[in-house]
Amino acid sequence: MNLERVVFGFFIILTLSLNYAFVAGGAEMAAQPNVWILTLTIIVNLVAIGLKLGDRSQTGALLLAAGLVAGLLLITARIVWIVAEPVGGGGPGPGDMANIVSIATGALVANVVATVILVGDTLLSRR
Image (cartoon, rainbow, N blue to C red; front, side, top):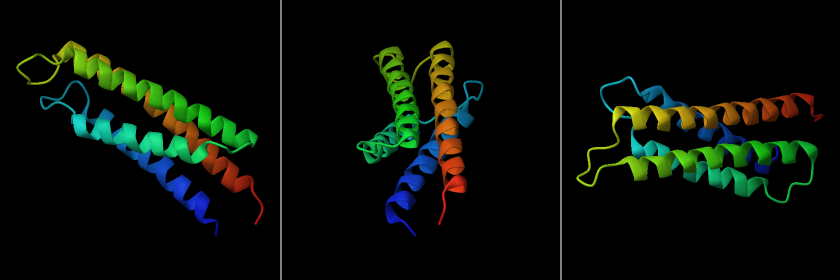
């Protein structure tokens, strides 16, 4: 078993799971999605990107590209959250939260693509 692949797979799947956990909170729910889940998703995604740097394979390039797209969208969602949050706290309003969740959903798509690529590469690889 290749420990490097295990660790990278762990971070890819963890990023996907955390991203889904944030998006599942949704803009329609009375309670807002948790900002800490979004922040943790960004951190885990950045670790996954760091693990893929230096991989010169075509699959590695696609995984890096998907990770960069997801990272850019997640960071954008967090910036929108920071800008939209009122001075007194309380979190962004419903319209802003809908924008944040929409951006995070785009990152979720990129994470699904990365996971599909990873699973496909694993299935095609020889022992």
